[in-house]
Each structure stands twice: as C-alpha cells, then as structure tokens.
Image (cartoon, rainbow, N blue to C red):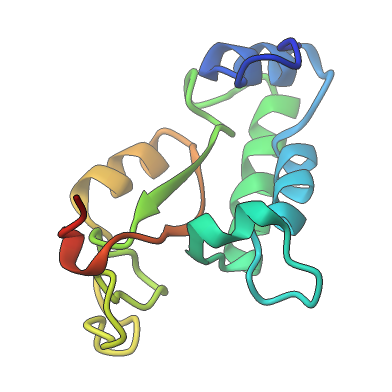
Length: 138
C-alpha cells in the first residue's frame, strides 16, 4: 500500500489486485463518491470531473475484478483508474471541449484512439475531466 503522503502508482494498484488485498471494484466504489458531480454532497475532487458514467465504470471494474480472480489480468494497467480531459472524445460521454456547447452529437462518437488503447489494456475510465475553454488556459 502507498503511504499517505504520495499518490498510488500503477504498480501499487497492480500489486494490491494481484495479492487480493483490493479489487478494481473496491477502488471504483471508493472513487465514485469522490468524483461524481451528480450527487447532493459533492466532494472537492468532483470539480475536476465533467461526468462519470457510473454503470460503465462499475461494469469495467467488475470485468477487471473477474480477470484478477481468474489469475488472468490483461497486464499491469488492468484495473487502474484513469480520466481523460474533455478534449478527447469518449463514446457515451458528451464532449464540450471546455465550452457550454455539446460537440458530441449526443454522445454518438467513437472513443479517441489513446483512451481506447488504455481501456484495451483493462484500465478503467472513471470519467471525463474539466478543462479551460477550448484548452486556452494560461
């Protein structure tokens, strides 16, 4: 387990899952209340997220949990949570690029290649992240 004064690494997650100390489902269920914006009592961390598709997160976490239980994780990224900035397209999510206009055609688009490749390795997309309008921050 990581100490309280640093972030968890990919290796920390992988080791915890491989040993059975934690499951990807445990981690997802711990993260979701912290990052969701659609709940009455938002945490300070939820400001970083545009949206989290709870059902999709739980489904990906359960699939990863089962792979670990069978001793067949896809690799070191399997079960590791990640978010993508709103300038990347993600199937099922609206795409605002930091504006108020929905550029996603109602969420009907394919996931950007880089996010798709990380998901292919079993990592769990827990949501899209906020950004400056059109990425034009200082």
